[in-house]
Amino acid sequence: MACLYLLTKTSSTNALLATVVVGLVAVAVAVALSSSPPVVGCYTSIFGFGDSITDTGNYMTSCLKGVVQCDDEYLKCSVPPYGETFFHRPTGRCSDGRLIIDFIAEHYGLPLVPPYAGGEDIKLGGSVNFAVIGAPALDDTYRDEQGTLTRKDISMKAQLDRFKNLLPSICKTSNCEEIFGSSLIVFGPFGGDDYSSAMSKKDIKEAHLLQPRIVNAIASAVEELIELGAVNIMVPGLMPDGCIAITLTLFYGSNQNDYDLTTGCLSWLNEFSQNHNKLLQNELNRIRDRHPNVFITYADYYNAALQLFGFPAKYGFHGRTLDACCGSEGPYNVDTSIGCGFPSSNVCADPSSYIDWDGPHLTEAANRWIAKGLLNGLYTNPNITASCVSATLNNL
Ligand SMILES: *[C@@H]1O[C@H](CO)[C@@H](O)[C@H](O)[C@H]1NC(C)=O
Image 1 (cartoon, rainbow, N blue to C red):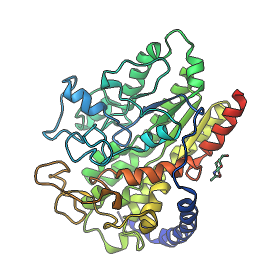
Image 2 (cartoon, helix red, strand yellow; image 1 turned 135 degrees about the horizontal axis):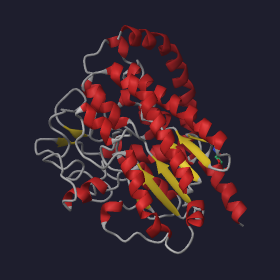
Image 3 (cartoon, rainbow, N blue to C red; image 1 turned 120 degrees about the vertical axis):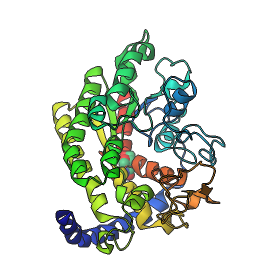
């Protein structure tokens, strides 16, 4: 802890500097992003993987069907007011509306990415989402060892296996190569759920030790996708966890010096996320060297989201910036034992004025800004939109 504390102190001036730069960029984004028509023709399908940030209904559908045993009374993200803003009903998405992957699909003129468990026939060359709420990056054996395994068969590896099993239906008679050539894989984010089990025990040391192991697992999975034929892969990093209402609540009462003065976020937790993201980008660089013909873009969810916490008013967020819109009494409107959707929980009148939706997850309004930041190239490295333009030209 002493070591973490020192790290926090020395980095606060850097953080302040970064905040100023980020502010200038924010103005540019806000100006450039009035709603634009979809970019048709770049990709014909999207394959999604990940956890609750990306799950468009797998957890809910498989629970309702009884395919898996559901581990809580109030089905996670499957009861009102989840979905109230856009779908006007719960869809299993952990938000009041659309997720980042939904906005990416809309941007490319594609239907929202259906969950594999949804029972719809997998269309030839069509999009499929494999992401599941609570999915860890490390496989079940690790969770078993730790005694934290709640659901089997949702891990990153399980999602890849499911994808491999479905490939014959996805490709059918046409060749997989063609389908992969025009599809975008959104791979992640992964890691959040592994870290949160360590964090909830407040075992920061263990969480730190997990980082190389998790990043290596993600990198191996990306290489496996490439071996299967994937050619366009977006790999998101972690969100700024020090700004998320659930972690702020978990570590409530930390030393005043642990907080960033401008945002109120926990600096050492943000540094934790940044460290994971740095390791991940190093691995992605190695993979790019080995596979120069594969387009791998890093999606900087961290900085795209940090913008919103740094300059909330600029993006139309007028609620208490760090509070969850939906939750229960607590310093950030979060009570870890009374989640959003529980009978005694409350919900804000205007979710679009909040960044945080339910403690761990962001509102549709926040997701939309993050997606826009990715798609205009500011928070994808390399610029996903530039790659798409050249891909379209090459196909002409
Ligand atoms: C990303 O690429 C697109 C298309 O070439 C371009 O319009 C956009 O300005 C680029 N974004 C950045 C941040 O450079």
